[in-house]
Every structure is written in C-alpha cells, then in structure tokens.
Image (cartoon, rainbow, N blue to C red; front, side, top):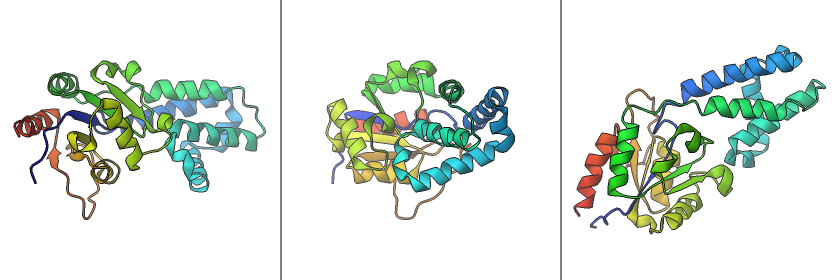
Length: 235
C-alpha cells in the first residue's frame, strides 16, 4: 500500500535529542548534595542508590505514578522524610533544585540545525514521558505542540497520547511520523496508534532489540531523518 505523504513530525526527547543518562546521574548527585546540606539525617540514611530503589518500590505499589516522574520523586522523598521524622520544609526546594539540574541537557550536535531544517519541511511536535522543560533548554520555538504525559495523564505507549498530539497538530495519525529511541514506547507505541515510526538509533546510546518490532526507518541523526523524510515527501 502506498504510504501517505507526511504532514507532521513528532519527537521523543530524552536520548533522541540529547543523551539523558549523564544528565540524570549528575542531577541525582547534585540533588543528594543539596539534601545533605539541609537534611543531613536523610542522606546519612539513604544513598543515591537507596533513594532510587525506594522510588522504584513506590512505583511498583502505585504504577499510576509513571505518568509524572517528578511527582514520583516528590512522593518518594516525602515518604523518606517522614520515615526519619523530618518535616517537609525543604520538599519544594529539593524538587526545584532537581528540575534545574535535570534540564541542564546538551543536545546532540545535529539537533539545533536539524530541527530548523526539518521545521522548514513540516510542523514539528513533541510527545514525551519525561519532564524536560523546552523553554529552559531553548528548543521550544521549534515545536507547534509539546505534549507531556505528566500533563496529559497517560504515558507512551498508550495510543491516546499519540492521538491527542496528532489532533493538536491537526493531522490524522496516518499522516504523522513519530521519532524516538525506544522500540517499545516510541516505535511500537506510535505504530499501534496508526503513525509511522522512525527509530532514532544514535551510535553512543545502547538500545535493546525488541522482537517483532519493525521501524518504518532507522536513522542515526537528524540529517539521516531529513534525507528519509524528503524521500517520503515525494510520494
């Protein structure tokens, strides 16, 4: 069947437009240091790894928290403070500090120019499960729509978040292309929602293969993506 000409291009963010692992590692260290200065009893009891394990245990008990990872972190921190008998006076400050550190991302070298060129071809949008602030990062101006799971209330791979983004972009799902690094959440999720899906497989990111998932294209950077997209635009 002939593929329909794309009318919108939607993006994942973390590990698609910037590497996220070093950012989170640095943010968690800075967050732990911040807490150690203000609630030393907390960091004396909980290491970074132990706080992370506590969050994962909380997520197992309350899987609905997956839609907002900031809120998951906040609820887990509140529980940890309660367990040591500390008040919550530093909760807001701790979360603000983590947010600042979490947004200290460095986009891949191709991103700024690549988004500008892609935006000249098609309207761009975002569908993300993360909490990156594109205004702070300086990329918001590239995107017509920015839909985050924390605001929408459902996370990828739920088809509803893809459909809502397409509706906001003013296109049917079959006229949209989604680009992301995660085969299950991004590629399979988008395809099951009726979009075409490009697997962004950057060379410096480890990817897990997923049986039965066949991306519509595999790209290594936004230059690859533009080349593939230009071919699709000729249909």
